[in-house]
Amino acid sequence: MSKTRSKAMMALSLCGVLALAGCAGTVKSNAGNSGGATPEKVSGSVVKISMADNLTSDDPITMALDSFAAAVKKKSHGTVDITVYPNATLATENNIVSVLRSQTVDMGIAGANYWTTVIPGSDALILPYLATTWPQVKAIADSSKLNSYLRSMYGTQNVHMIANLPNTWKDFISSSPVAKPSDMNGMKVRTAGGAEVQVLQALGANPVTLDSTDIYEGLLTHTISGVDVSASQMQQLKFYEVAKNFTDMRLGIGWVPLFITDKAWAELSPSQRTLLNTEGTVMVNNYLKTAPKNTDNEIAQLKQAGTKIIPIANYAPWEKLVDPVVKKYGQTYVSAGRIISLAEAAAKSAPKN
Image (cartoon, rainbow, N blue to C red; front, side, top):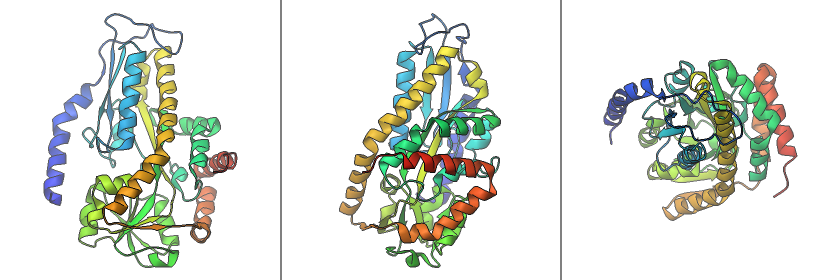
């Protein structure tokens, strides 16, 4: 599909659902319900919520969101009905933050790096090598201190953070093999902005800002020569057709917080709010139970498709280059410093592999 045709289809899709996003919300609020984590069934009282999801319908994160929505509906006895709209139907990754802040949609996922224009340093959790093992990722995800801080930080923007999903490792795909840091010298690498720009520069690359919908064509036309993505994204979006090298460098975790707007949050009863928070935690835990095996399977499938898999046994040379960036970022922004400190403390408490 051509770039022009792809963008035209997305524009038509957005136009077709803006009315839906605008009128999503409470059919009848269950404001009087209170008590335990599972609200009692109240006849005729249903809160309908639309969730914006810019990922594909078969992405592991989308499947986790679908399970979350189904669990909430079942345990609320149908009083909270969440519909997930994947494939950037309600919002794109580039406008989801403004859409959430203006409360145009009810819920949505918005990567940490897309909040930096309104909360400088908020993307610190995606910085490289705060974690290099799955137990460390789980420890960070489970940190009550970190989650409390993130909820407080994002809470200034008309949203409540339900959960913080770890969207697997940010690995690297490229037109030419990358086995050591010097292989990235001068390479044009796609970035979404934020702290990632300084990280790529520290590794010797030339960052190129590019929308995620343009990555395939960018690799095809050599506008870019590399991009940090997960194995699942490389497979689902068929990047392996235009970039034949996959470096398992674990250049951070692409955390994806799930938010609900203050407006939609206010329509929920105390017990319904508790239910959403509880099921958000369950969603993260369930996701992490299968993530390691899923990632291994995805890398195996890439290899089967003809992709050259380049494992990195020692992260130290990479970490040495980016560590000054991480430290400076933490010193520059209060929020970044706090996030880094809490994440590092959590990672240290994790069991060894």
